[in-house]
Length: 578
Ligand code: DGT
Ligand code: CA
Ligand code: CA
Image (cartoon, rainbow, N blue to C red; front, side, top):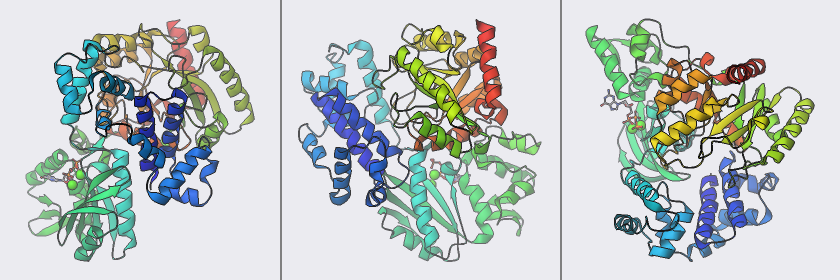
């Protein structure tokens, strides 16, 4: 799929135009096209050939021409022309967390900085802090960003890893001679970032399979190849991904799946149990002296160790082994427990589809409700709604809710928590909404005291039902806010405010261990996709996985409730606090 590369090219054109001081409208439209393309789940190239691409809302004629050019030639002339206008190293500066195109423009124009090293020196000399719009705090935040980048480990997001695993698994499944195939490692555990992708194959033909893998068209570089294991860097959309393929006989497949799923700490705990029982556990099986007790089937390894089967998402040595001994593992939430999505955007703000389109799509997913939560007025980059536009949108939602059968469309908003901790809409307007999400979108780098206070204060508002992406992190790109999570969780419990598990794989915010803290404090969690397109609704699985890793049952998750129960939950807080 070329989707991600094309999407990145559009994003990069927008960045360069912004550095060059181009027209804001044009810049925004390039960004939007980039996002639309990255959200399309099918291959852009195939869609183009089938004449389906022009039907995607938001893709104009000139964007289509650029996509066509890329598919044909592997490049976009407009992109190359833009690139020629700036020193190429300038784009490196954009990879620094906290450095956007606006900041790059200023340091480039005023300080002639074109490289990360030069920026570091300029910060040390104090000249960045003196630039207008920067100051000491921002300069320090950028220095931290550079530090973050320098120590970043090359781990990738789970969606990137999943895409790479699909490429390899589909390929291996098609070559024949395979009895079983299974993703293992951190990807099977749905860890929030992935070091490398592990794929396990049951087959008698190890050597042939490893050879086919290492010679596959998507392999960029072979790292190692032996009779049962191959390691390679594969070309997967945005970035090269390290994939390990291991071939085992089917008699050991279950034991190997257990072993290579990990985590290492979880395996250590299992091995301790085995040793105590005078058994031997390894990737080939569970043995009593030379006799195999379990091997082909993973469940039997757990069973023969006297444990309940442990969901791979819980295998982190966070108490799951002890719980499995005494039949007290949580009965974790499943994707089909989800009854609706409470966090979605439409083309009224920065999404790309209409209310009715996303409602119909939600219905197809089997949802009972969907809550439209476009941005509020202060989010100008996201085309946030003015109070007047929101009033109209609520009317429109009520009308569509009447017309579209089989799903309830709720009226909501993702309302900015302003710098002074107040809400971006007044309570009279919030009162007309069914569900209100509050979020910090500015000043994320401010002090622990300030960001915590803003969040706590928002929860005091009787109309605020949920705090979106409570820490604001973007995996691999922006560190979380320095926020007092324990205080946020405590106050969420006190005020009956839900905390979000933002399901977008860039965010996964709250993260698993914080979800578990929230659950222990009896806080409700809302899993929202923050979808900006119909395709974005499919991100729910990552949020559910994060909840599972936080040991959530469906009772802990607000959007497993019926529409009526959500409404009464909202009404209860309003009554209690107003
Ligand atoms: P990653 O790739 O860093 O995201 O994390 P994993 O968990 O996928 O780790 P990886 O790829 O190094 O190894 C895959 C699994 O193999 C790991 O979760 C557990 C198992 N494993 C690997 N090395 C060891 C080891 O030295 N001891 C034990 N007990 N298990 C190991
Ligand atoms: Ca791995
Ligand atoms: Ca590995």
